[in-house]
Length: 287
Image (cartoon, one colour):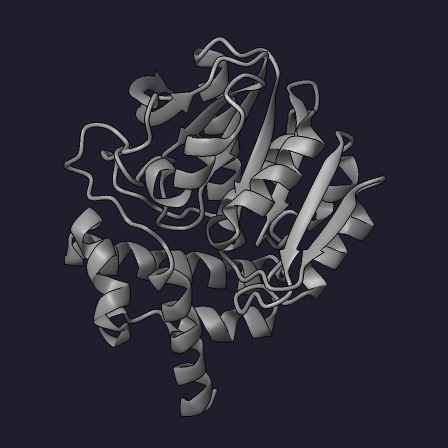
């Protein structure tokens, strides 16, 4: 990989993260009104979550790598229709306020997250629910929908991939060393996790993604896609520098009767930058 490729990758990630509103974890509540939070023990771990709304349809929001409910889904917690939906945003184990434990990335970490997510919703007394997954959270949502079909009502994913290519690995490895990140990109995450935890955990995430390429022929959940039978909506940002367009197209091809929508100005964080449009699309699909 050339130095120019690495610099380009860093610029892409910097632009992505500079558009995200980060909230320090010493805040006890989300700035969104009528949003509550709690913790519940699931599979031996105390998982943190936020919830809002009182609608009949339960929806779980699944964040991306190093993300949590309050950093990744502020506009959704604030403005998704609270009359129609009960919205839950969780922090996967080792992320956000679901620490301890420290985050690790064994070969089955996506499957572990999928089980944690489903069991969390059971613990919260939801018998059936829809999943909205972004990036890594989209991968987790795909696995959950395939493995627990009786529990998942509808599925929305964006910025997700079901396998790893050399093109993906070049991007991940280019941004592996957080000391090369810009201060604007690094500082907000250091405020959440501290520099040591951020560096160690992000490095471990990159290693985990490399593991899929080396030991699974790039496969993450490609083999599970044909088993997803719930209504599925795939959204892709045409300007997403993190996920090439062949990934959402493949997911669309593999999931029967799924819908694919491309947001022409959307980037990886399209649900944050174009929250009003995104929320409208999601609400129309979930109704």
